[in-house]
Length: 626
Image: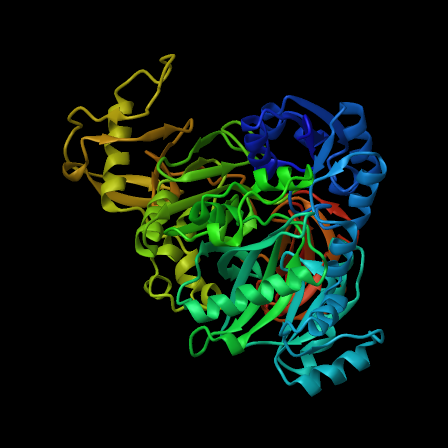
């Protein structure tokens, strides 16, 4: 076994890899951009090396800087984590050329599976069923449009070099095809440096089933059963579980055999995931599951597989990279119970899931479940990388027990002042159709209004806040300590009073206030947590003097820092309510800013390539009725 490892990544995956390395007595080396010099993964490592400025292209995506960091640190091996360069053959080759151990599949396997069009051809040759589609060298719009019509609407346009849900657009008719193609190519170029695309028939009511495979350099190859990653939003996974609901022994045998055939076709060594799309209108059937792609790396959702098999997949990666055979044969790998994972992100569901950035002053994560976290209280969540705060993973003997445990954990998350999707996750997990296994990849979009909208605070919470505010008003506000954790109300005055919650007035009945409440003093307001959401209470209305421009004035501002990647309108253009005016890329996602009402574009003050600040006015729509 090697003595030291550099993890060419950040956040929760770097910390998770370090955890196994420490257990095995392997020295850990972190890399950090200027934005991450004080990050949690840097604090966790034995040593850290700076690799460049905050933009990923100049740090975590810089092969020369990463290899130089490994050599400078004296690390013997490099683990790429996931994302960034984890599926880049050139990075693997550069690591090996520097005389270092690459913890991952061979560059040849990465390259073979990295281009989705050639991977499809290879799978067809290996007898693995693939989704009906088109791939070819002539990527002109006319050729693609003709192929799409031949396949039949709807179709998916997919980045040929894509992965991770990026560079994909569903198109339902020929009129929408050119705009969708342009957007897909733009995102593919930005994410993968390659704007080539392929087409696939869009499967209605699809389920996303994937199989964890693992190979060694001695010819050993096993699967560790399947995961279900069907709950997605904008093709990004939200909740994953193992095993898949409704999976029969016959279908499991077929899909796992197909996954092994796919891996065998490229002489696969290391951890990999073979992803399938299933037409689940009549349940899971072996003749309605098709190969979609192979991820030649560790997956974000790998903990659910670890939970149901008892295997540490990172340890297996270390051992296989060190030349050892697989620790277990296929007949010694068994399923045990059920595991479900939720991705906790700093984002605001009720505002279109825009990222929430800034300092995470308060963070309390639940006990009783596995937590893979990338940050701690006091850390900064910036705009440069993805918004993942932590993964919450629950295990139980049954699916019912695992989902109930995870829903309770998500509802117990506390963060301030950053917003998260914790309440949204809890509502997904509590949905009756989800609990019954009636799911497809459109599940969230079909219920978005009810899932993304946080309910109002309960009357008990409002009463607790009012009682605490009343009690505090009698205290000396300049006292040196106002630690309100586990605050005891001590018989507050009785009656009915008005308080303000997030700027809106509410009435509270002090007679119904609980005896105790966990409160956070946010300076000028008290924050109480319920159902995964945070509510800020104050005894008086907010001062609206000098605030933002009145709603409805037509001004459209950047909701977060980012880069302008498209401006599909021009000064003086007529637009309809909901038309996209500006597209910003931030935290690995594109965010379209839309017209608030019908009108005429004026005051357009941004262009493609601009870096914009949060709150910066970019364009104004003037109503023609004004």
